[in-house]
Image (cartoon, rainbow, N blue to C red; front, side, top):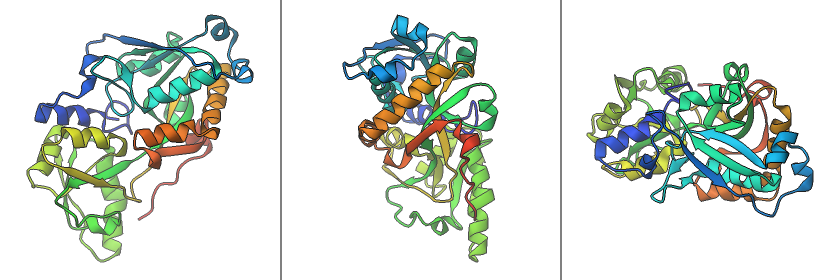
Length: 315
């Protein structure tokens, strides 16, 4: 999210890994230098002819959908020790491809190239936990498949913080300069505290996510806000045990796969395939596998940021 808000926490996982010299298995595929890594996945025999018929003629003829991602953000996508692309989104696109009776040719590129790559037609679609917003909907079409939100992270020894936002009042937190999470503290959490007669959160800002996390590990702050989906990666990389809780005052977003605005046939086909894996329980199984049940979107749709906007939490 640092590269295109509100996906503000993508660099955090990498920063933690660098801090504690833990090699997250995504290092086998680095897109920072402009290189790409491809992975083809065969569709299963459980395809539906009705769903297959929704595909554009070109895709039906080739049997392949060219998908762009940036496989450096677990649990969305990453590269494992066997150089396989893994994550909840690869599981989702494989399940949808199986329903449609096609193969996915997934290529890892730089995040900033995903939307331009789809706009230009180089790729049929992109998936990389891309958050849907109305500005992006002017460039591409979203088929939204999950929610995204933040979480409150603290040392495991700190048991005073709960899902009640009032337990954050008067505490110290660290954020990276420019992240939208700092704005959520001042816009929703602080007013909630003051309305309850409690002190606001004390915010210290640091130039990097690395520095903010070091402030937590060293005990200089009580908590940090970070991406809910990144919990496993953060806990695995942390030098001290971490725990996390959700907070009802943190904004939710939609995450989705993106398509060229003119490619309505492919959009409808993947939306239908997504609805099919929701209906047969495959979707829920995938989200459970990756410990993401709180982010399940069981009523997926197109451009939901505009058509079904999520209310901003009120203090």
